[in-house]
Length: 198
Image (cartoon, rainbow, N blue to C red; front, side, top):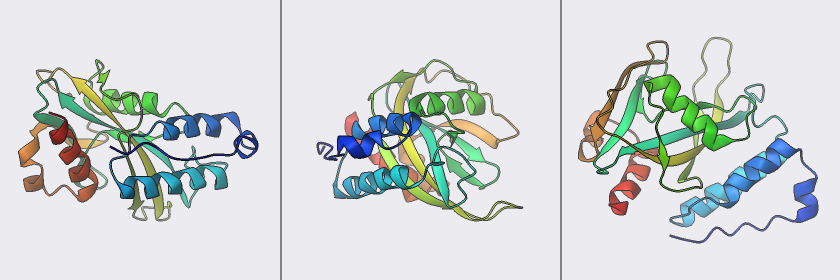
């Protein structure tokens, strides 16, 4: 793992509002695994500085989201939902909607989408950062999600209660079975890192 290296001038940091400074605090303790992560981190930091509404959906170019990679205590299964709107298997997550406590946003999304409340953080900073495009839907133009991802552990005997408004299904998926579900690299990359933690 690489050490995070972002040097943010204090004067520049103080030039933005408190919620965005809070987001910078999370980004500064991101766990970096390779040079891709370092580049992504730099992009996130500049996005936060350049976009006063980065925590709100009103920023139609893109906005911050938070998600959770939840593994069972044996570290063999990952909790995923089959997302209705995107028709893909993904980790629980969603929009910050103004909340700069991105770890709390990720926790809330797990509860809202699966009913699971009892989560123990494995790492106290972001575990992965990912920028992905969201296709145009109805009156919302195509835009980017700047997803800040956290790693949690939970009791794998918990039976997920799917939120039918958001997902078709929620399930504990064995790590070796992820590729067979057609999940994309944005899920496979963190899953490989989880497998390496075992």
